[in-house]
Image (tube, rainbow, N blue to C red; front, side):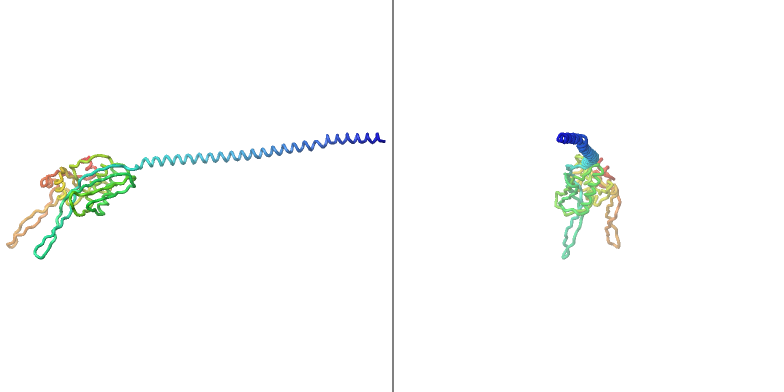
Length: 305
């Protein structure tokens, strides 16, 4: 009985071992496969993630490259702009200019006092200095000048830039006006052409002929216009040692007044009779300074530079 029981137990043990070998090992191999499959799936997902990240990185690199090209172009443009706009020019030029001012004298006649107004000419020392700045046009004067003179200074600087092709956007232009003698304040645009000449000289670094002086307005296109007090200015130029006086062609006709006597009813009447004469001929004959007519700033440059 025991032997049968032992045999049964042995068989049962063998069956159990066989079962374990045949059936219990399969799930173990299945878990390993599942684990390996899970790892594969995880690696595939990681690979997809890395591929997505690489794609994004490539797009970012392309964006950075485009930005770099853009900024390179901007730097190139800025460098060109900086080269086109000078940081500031240093220069200086000076010349004497004829001006006319009114001289008022008081004359007493018994209990009455009357004013006698006359016009006199004088030479003003006009200079210009250019230096690094903010593109301003500044005027410092003794005697004081009016608004019209300051406007002429701005026009002179504009024309000088047009004539030379040089920008003064980074340069301050400073005009200084002084007189050797004490004279009252004067105003007007008759020094416009001369100030234009001074500015061109300061820009180009050229010297001016101090034996030459000129008068005349200037407009935005560089045309020289008429002025007043031609005869008085010519006298002042000659008295100051100048040998050539440049005059606007618009002033080529000079009106002088001749005194003529007439008898009316036993009385002698003295009249001032106007006469139009050629300014060049009259000034050269009566004052002794050479005169040349000019129409534009280019004409002036032919005599001065």
